[in-house]
Length: 267
Image (tube, rainbow, N blue to C red; front, side, top):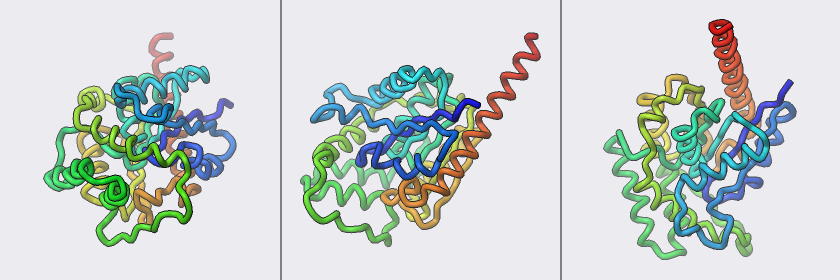
């Protein structure tokens, strides 16, 4: 039996192997999961012409290199926004979509609360470097959540690239054309993991909008004690792995059923 094939995209902070090592272990045998780093960090600074399309092309190259015509795609935060862009541009390559609190999901149908909350991200551009990351993290959680202090000691070398990478994402979100009509035509199952302590005017609002406006086959799973910066793929990997395996198995069963039906009509 062929293993489930999945590409996992990280957010704009942790490298993919660090972000997803616990989840990949929890997924266990029968799942060939690839933690793919962002194209954004291939060099010392974001490429001047970088957009979400750069990441879309990188995802397809990864799949092609492995001989995967179709695959499951999961993305967290900025990687979740990339996953939405792949679904809009190349739905024929995906068997399903898993969104782990995508950082952005298009510039349409915003609620007043979400539009007000997004102003905080635009304000980040004017902050000095030492204030940027703390303010960025504060926007992602409920006001009463206490964020952990920075790890003691010098930061890892890769951390130096992250503020510029986050800024590149935020700037591209302002003008990227996430094709609404093509996204609305995506018919495969969509899984959304939401932390109960994440900011409701951000990720909670996004989940409600995607479920309401777009995806007919949408499953929301809430992790009550998690938030955007202690996400389930790192803190509750077994529960998330169980949910993802169910999601992927259902998607493959539905795809198999469609193939059988098509063959019976043409046979």
